[in-house]
Image 1 (cartoon, rainbow, N blue to C red):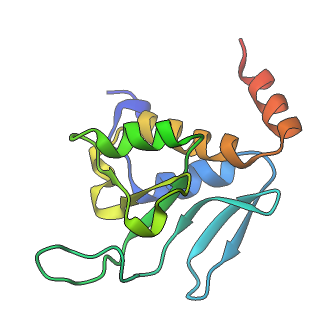
Image 2: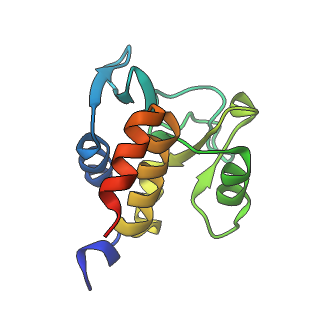
Length: 139
């Protein structure tokens, strides 16, 4: 199995997000990391909130990661796929992002996670930064 085919881990989110160009890491109110490009968040680790709870216990999920997505159709394709660990809540209606519990990140391969992180960065980066990064990816 290649590195890109192995199961994703939370550490991969940090590595991938911080490796994108022009990224800064801010800290939320509880020290949670918020990855930004040009002062725009693209991945952040959310604190427990009342809108994301375990349906069986009512306990707030302590491990939600938010990823920006390029469009509403991208969001819907991720959250409507029954095999996908991504979800959303009414709080995020109309917001171009998807949620993922860290406890379910292993359902993704490292390659799948990389695509989500890169798409999140691309959705928030300036047109100039986006164009430069995309040009650098071409063979």
